[in-house]
Length: 359
Image (cartoon, rainbow, N blue to C red; front, top):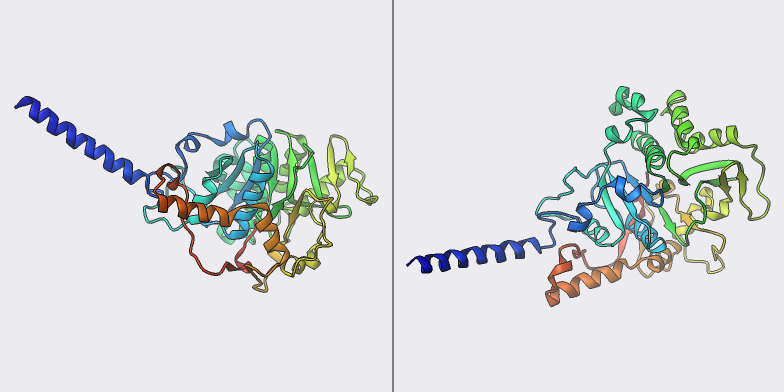
């Protein structure tokens, strides 16, 4: 009788283990949205060597848009040996989603080996920086352009603490950037803050954070972002106009030619949504900034339209391939990756470009 009872209990235990194992294989992020080996990582360990690629989302939005996904995946492919870290304010500290998750892009990005998604905790981030006093006294609810201003502050603190390269979420990577300490020229003698990179604890970024606080004015567009970078660069260097496609070097940093990231200037941003002109080679570019903030006309990107932005995303990442792979895995019942790959709605590949919101 005792042996029969032991056998019965063992069978119940085995069935329970099988049930919970199968439940954990569902693609709804029931237990975790990140693979176990990623859930054990932390930003300090990943970025501590100053070689990571950083993206930031300062809204509460959890589902990355197709353009954001394109930017992150293009970076992951361009820098396969480097961690690509996406800090999202909407993530909580447990990196979990509801069991009825409807965030396919989130799951697809977390499936990429060198992409890591982390919560953006500004209070913790600004500790031990000049931004701490500013953040503790600011009333975000009454601030103009808070999403953008808080992003401007966060990118300075992250790259100062960990080093690496920061990119806006509408920057499509083409080839690796061969610089460690650099700013990107938006135009002659005017710096962008949409792409920049530094080694950890670089004094330029510390002085930028001090200037951020001393000259804070969120009512002036760009005052805490590109204008801040430009006025600090002018304190460090005696700028001059670029000669041909050559970068400007001063002290231990480089000011990269506009062709490196801005071969299409912001007044011409619509060219990204026009039929691709194959004469545009971008041979001198490391990445392309798509000026998504300018797109207030509701322009759309439609699959098969042969626009420049469609060709950039199709050529630099495998979004559609991943979706097809996810379908095949579910169809063939291959469980050990189907947890992280979820399907996206079928039909025409079209989305409103105005919904892409780059911080």
